[in-house]
Length: 385
Image (cartoon, rainbow, N blue to C red; front, side, top):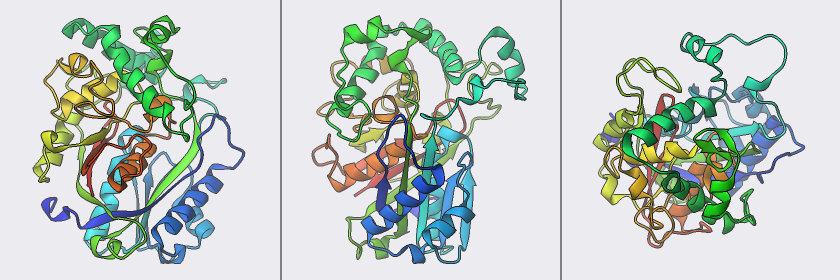
């Protein structure tokens, strides 16, 4: 069934708001705007929409969005869980629905106002309920996602001799891509290695520039069958393969219950993804890798087979993940330097790369990997032109 998915559905249109620390519109208004823009981009009517897939953490319900944009009757609607792990999974699920004939015109979106809103772990009042695993970490002061990733990062740097200078290559590469991207929050704000090394700690060994932005914004894609996409306004971007991955005994964020917590979910996802694909790691021209925190990129490079375990620190040296390098990554600036909308801007940048319209376009790019987070059950898609 997974092999049968190959290239049967395509992304035909996309829409994005501007990204900022604060936008006045509500999340619902932002979501409606990007869906309407995506329909306009594709050349389809909002009244044709009969499928919707969103993140489980999305606050704008499909019922509300359907009314706001004037959709058709919905014959398929679903959520995909685990926040940052879910974006590519949403696209993959919609591709399966279209390939199976469950709907004809589907939309996937993410609308988020975290820049002007509060952080759930920083609210006042009574303490929120936490998962069982967190009962062992919260009393020790590990309160935020960045603290949990920092624990893994410290073990990774120690085990494999990775240096902060090597880790810095992730933030520096993505900032250079953002500097070429007028949509990016960090468009006119260059970053040097000296700036990186002098930055304040957020959760040691992660500094300010290892952590994603807090952003307001929204993005969406419109998906149709491959046959219909060829007759629409934009060049079709085919969903070649899609997969999800959740290791046995998975615990989100830091998994203290396995022998090696550095064997992250991408390894399970990658097996499924490449088994369902005609494309292997060596065939991928550009990648959009989930980067809520910079170490996640190193773990994904290893998990998806671009280098061996513990080798990503040297892999990213000497401009290897910049345009012109062996594997350009996050060519819009990603979550570290464009905006953080749970990785959905990585999907839209993947579409631009396949259309040939990125501000940091990879010459001749025909294949793009887009991934979800490394610290929760995850997902990935392979796009091709």
